[in-house]
Image (tube, rainbow, N blue to C red):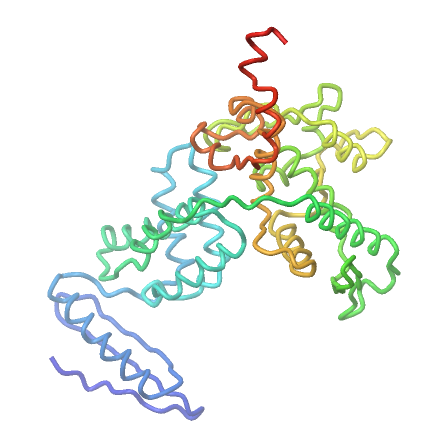
Length: 394
């Protein structure tokens, strides 16, 4: 079948197509697009004609201009009733994450493998684990299946093969050296002090920044924000308690029991990956939280305030990346702090079961991926092996 539609030039110098098809027994279809060059318009139109003809042979509908965000809303209106209660929050949050992404406004039919690969690269740069990214992609893959099965769209998911590649992602074993830990801690202290010493009257001036000199002479320019009062404490707390990033920044003061030295976790079970109902606090973590808490008792609404104030996990991640870059510390992410915490507990002699009680890992197998013991930390066992201790009763 031949079509009379050809690319045409716009007054702006760009090129456009306005493809229409209306046949008996078929849903009317129209596609209008604008391109920078004539060759781009011709190439797109050629592929479009092939797709329209193939869809007609298979008795399928051509996709409309429905954007990713709009399609997710329509999918969710039906899928919400089929999602298990244990997965409801996680699925809803992932849907909202995609609707806030840079792909949300694109028509579903125009999303390509290149778009998805770029999105994956961005998530990896944020330190997201391969398993997390696979779960995020599952939402959109479910959407495409729904479009194919329920709406009978002629559309192919750009995700399937990309998810399989993530299955082979390498386990991370990045540990912080002591000098790196101390340098990062001092950098966050310097940022906090610069914020406290600032002139508040300048905060709202356009382009105003805090200039923070780090120990290696590099200068960080940061927009003044209350987050700086908390990021150093959050960094230390993450190493001490081994909590997942999302759970850590959700802690409120009413969750802290200084007398029992535990953090109470209300959202346990499958929704929160079976985190224990209470997480024990180390003495250093108690000190960090008491410094944030201050001497005055908290009552009423103050108890419902987040421990780390307005600071969110994504923002804390960015601050850590900026500090590491300025200090010349390579390949370290916020999620690596959880690895660091679990590894430190192992080096202190904790069993994997005891570490799991703190970290909330579902299985010992998954926990093992987080424990990376340095050889020098266990050299003393050659001189005083645990088995010999048990036999001699020492």
